[in-house]
Image 1 (spheres, rainbow, N blue to C red):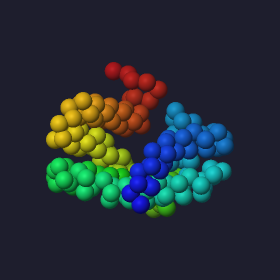
Image 2: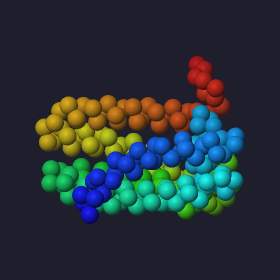
Image 3: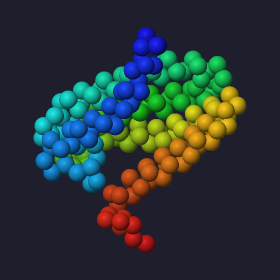
Length: 180
């Protein structure tokens, strides 16, 4: 199982990036620039069922992969493995599996119970996922791979910056560009 998932996981990660771009043109009025990908899973989107099933499948693939990764990291540092395991499990559950079962509407408004579960699960999952490169960087420093450690920390900084920009984009003072 480990070798099979290790060889399939890069394709699943690539598919997670590509699928929204394939489905978006089928949903009239959807814009990558102004709407979150979760909108592709709402009941008015033509391929919403496919997108929601994908989220659940991807979430379970992540759970399986982290179960396989945990012992490798734990050999080096038990605390890093627990922290990395925790953030990735929460992302897989909140940002993928719950998001696949509980759809949002066409906007980010949290009017229904389904939208609230989806919204809070996604926010918590993605917020914690921004910490994953930090823990991966610490792991690489522990195994004396400074280059990958530094690259992971750079990814962590980018994750924080882009997450902050994503959150700020909803604020009225920053819509349409940054105004100081």
